[in-house]
Length: 239
Ligand code: ADP
Ligand code: MG
Image: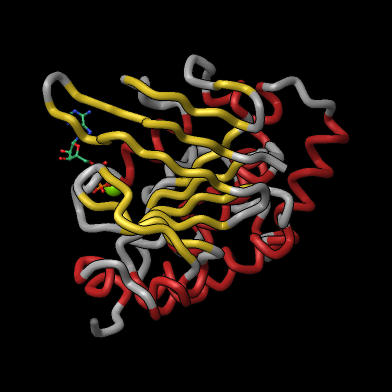
């Protein structure tokens, strides 16, 4: 169970300030969704949490540990992106096992973890297939499975459904909701610009605007009490 604390977190690319002083606490096991318009800094903030971008200023802590200078694997995070970069020449099983083998897991442990994740995601029948023999939705589930087997403390998603067609998007969204219910000890942060995804998946939503936090609250709080027209516009209730 990991609490994530951001204090005056900042990121600049050269003189361009992208994240402008974010203060936010994400609770253990929480499903937090970052929403906001394209270019507002959602992916950058997620990448700062992941350790894929260097923090310009401020602190990021996982529980009591400041993680600013730790690598992604030292932080215990796993991340799923919108483009599921599976290894085309490896089976589903090998794609899922690859990271674990690198981490020198025992053969039995690797097998157990891969099968458990495959059951959870309903891809156990496809373990011998190659990625090209799967649908887009199945491939994205393999990408999620590859992250799950590493038993991350923190699970990050960056618009994982945006390359899927509408029907698959709904099915995979439901799969992610189930995953959150099953992995209730894992803190999850999910980036989207889709209001329905945010409202249905989130325990709390953080609305980002131009590198700042505009409002944080449960879907109902944001819907009923948006603090600005900007938030109302995003969450969909009239103000
Ligand atoms: P979002 O995910 O909300 O669409 P991003 O976090 O990807 O937004 O980007 C926020 C802003 O930061 C954008 O203006 C983008 O062009 C800029 N940006 C992101 N990454 C870099 C980078 N590596 N170098 C320079 N500018 C970047
Ligand atoms: Mg983005």
